[in-house]
Image 1 (cartoon, rainbow, N blue to C red):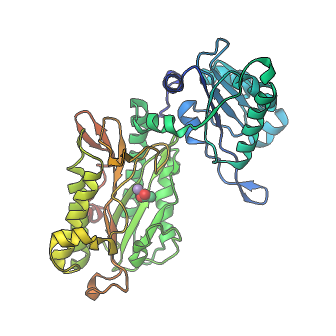
Image 2 (cartoon, helix red, strand yellow; image 1 turned 135 degrees about the horizontal axis):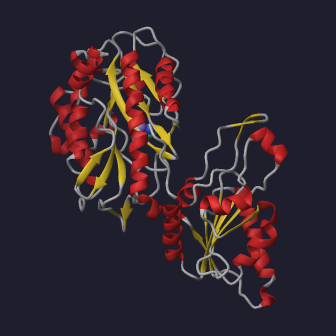
Image 3 (spheres, rainbow, N blue to C red; image 1 turned 90 degrees about the vertical axis):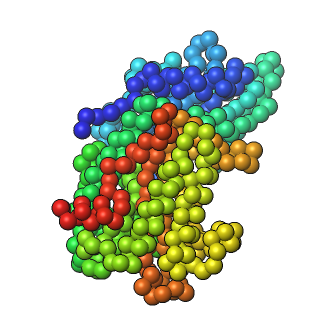
Length: 439
Ligand code: GLY
Ligand code: MN
Ligand code: MN
């Protein structure tokens, strides 16, 4: 697969869009993610802050992006690590300020070690500061230090900033609507994830361990230069009922259903797919009956995805379909309306039907505006992921107990209707059995 990247001009456009909403009285101060210790002197794999990725693509820690709309000497400024031959011998190449300017299309860049001297001067004269206050205590302290420096310099004639505002208010709304470069990256992440799920379905055998299927999945991710967007969930049998099961240690039995919730992150963008399939390649009658209901709920939810429809509609459709199915099979009793009103499905379906997805698997963006579900617009991307999880001690016929099923797809809201980014992966019980029979 050919490498995909976001063009420099697109980052510039995003910074300009953000600066348009900030206005000439404001300033944006955004820190890179910091490296996190995993064990003594080794770190977790570094993952850049999603907003910094969105606005610049700059990949290093110890950096701060500053946007100063309307500043005559340059509006986009990066503070980053200097080149350092000794450190680079150990840790790999750094851009350094000079190369960062050209590589990322910025107006200026300075060594991060000079930030205390330079940043207060950039803040001076600005009334509003947009930053992620409260996300990183150390950075907050430094930010307050820079702001206080401007207070000390009031005698120079500039009042200090009077408003500290959440950067999320502006950047989340921009990130919610995916541009065409983002859509390409998300389709790539979805395509890689589809191949990974196919590899797992092909290789499954009774007696394998969950972690061996995880290895099949993640082998495909790495093969195509992706990483897991979140810890892969591989739950066999009743482990499928644990929503965020990540232990992945159990042995797979022939009669088990296996739930895999795994998605690739490609160039920062996540996919999020769940499929549930039988270890033997054949669903039992009870497994198929429940799987059919979840599949119908997935389809019913997709049917509600239209520009102008409310986001909540797809959850409501999924819940109605699941509840109706549970009534038909006798796992719930009584009238549909009453069950919906009492939310009895929650015993077996305790989560919502989806979430925004993008640079973060649970991406940013408000779901409700003025306490009403927001309306779908072109460019939004979200998951549809109905499920049923019958606890091992549920008060239902024993044949249903310990079955956990989720079917999760990623949906782009396009001008001509929804585009299911993960459509290529078999989904219904028939499609899964057919696929596994050929494998
Ligand atoms: N993989 C997490 C989720 O489905 O939301
Ligand atoms: Mn999800
Ligand atoms: Mn998922």
